[in-house]
Length: 166
Image (cartoon, rainbow, N blue to C red; front, top):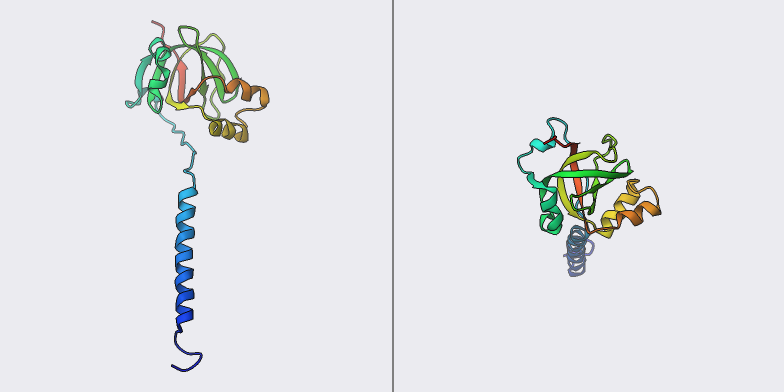
């Protein structure tokens, strides 16, 4: 081989190091990236008709909230206590326990004392969830953050409808 032409052992080693380094960087980036937390809001028939939501009476839910984590439920028999912000409301379960509901952006305001049925997913309330609520403006001040820290779970509501009289 003449000088300046072809490949030398040093250039082959450098090319190998560059390839391995690039693959290591791609692997590292994929392992530290977080999945998107954006949720799609569907329009159409009320979510209460969603067959995947398990109908759960408020009294049953109240005695075993954690058992419903990561499950879609239709929670009936709850009363609105307070709408804390446009996207957060406290509901009272039949035994008096307060439970936080995360409403979809643009949801209509709820009225204290109103009986409702909530369809959504029961989620664990983590510091990361609370931080994302602060960053998005769902929690509007430190006082709301303190209130929202109460309890270990919340419902990410797809729909909140007036309860059927019965």
